[in-house]
Length: 415
Image (cartoon, rainbow, N blue to C red; front, side, top):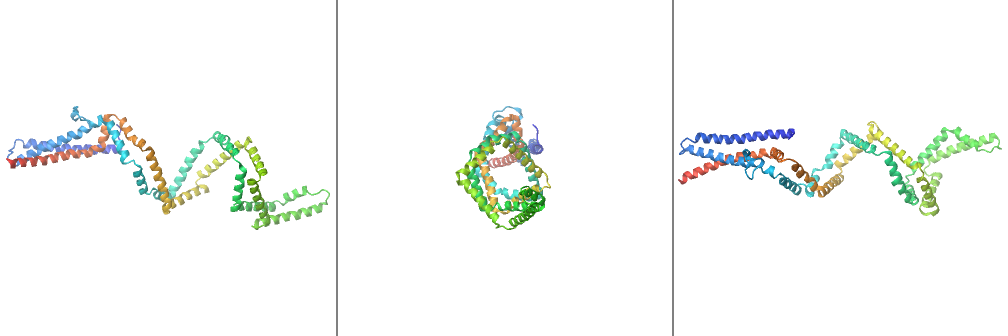
């Protein structure tokens, strides 16, 4: 039986305690032998009787303790070597005792709630080295999971699940409602600002390209200087218009765009003709053979971008991940309601696990002991409890000696 360092220490302590018990029994035997030929009418009678009773008590308790683990002196006396013979029954009893008294939902929930695991985890995760370690481990696990998702799996998921489901769902009312919500929240304002800035910047940076486009569409019969004059005026008007749209939040163009988008949102939700066109466009798009490949390409690009950014500890995304972990850790420590909810969720999860799988978990005890042979089970259990059982032998010797003293004294008084 291979022993761990802790088991080796237990075995050393067990041997030492056995030596103490055996030594005490030896002292009692030696005293008994030495006082046997002496005059028992006086004090030596008390000493001899004490030693004799101590030997009897020590031997009796040695027999009782030894009989738990093996046959005393190798003699197969009935009702000895109890653990090797009844290890399977013992395993079942230990399993039931553990399951009924320790692995219960109430006890597990109480221990988890009293431990305040959320606050302790927050205190640990708030330290920057630990937060970085969490992010690094999360990236490593995510990378391993993402690498197991190959292109064929993504393609099958897109063609067999996502695209058919999108094809069955009417997209027009959903898109219209979404557009209405965007307009109500003014979430599109940032995009409009961005487009206005880019248009103005492009016009300022590319006057030649803009005027060339207008020259191509100018009437050929008009004099050249007239066309140049008109094109120049139009260009500067376009620059002024783009700047005005960019700088004026209530520009008529912005209002007109809002009205147009609001009309489109209403038509998508309520106009059958527009809805039919939207559904037809959706069907043509989803049934295009290149859509699945586009989904795969987007997936690959997104995966590579995320993993590359997170694996670079100097990247902004990695630093943001560390800050998010630290902010959440700080909230776990200082937000009592959040900490209580997390502890409650952990307690609920543990309670569910114990309630559902408690018996299966406790069966590990019986299965493990049943796999041991009788001698192995006896030796392993003796390592854990044998040292304390040696006190029974010591007490038996001491109490036996005291009992012998009392009995001898009583007999002297009676006679």
